[in-house]
Length: 62
Image (tube, rainbow, N blue to C red; front, side, top):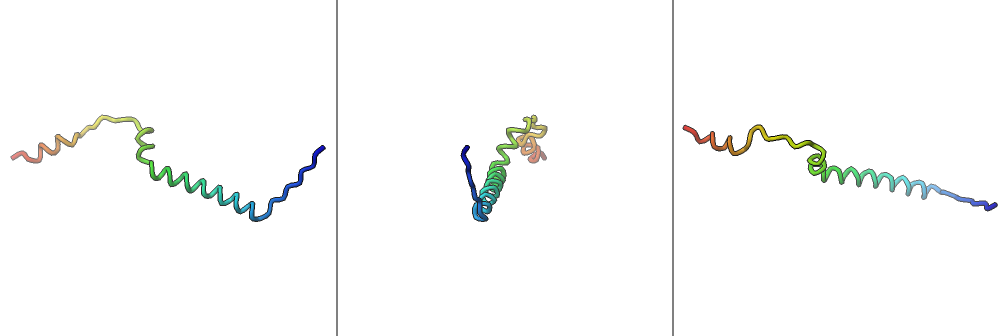
């Protein structure tokens, strides 16, 4: 039977905590950066009720 002794000091624990926090912050920054693209993929496409061309042409009427 093999006996394995492992020792984790405070430096290893703080390194694991730092890696976890860096991963969470990196993921949140990535989501923030690409939020419009992600939302566009998730959201259903709705037809435009008020096209921009119609409002521009009605402003010039006498």
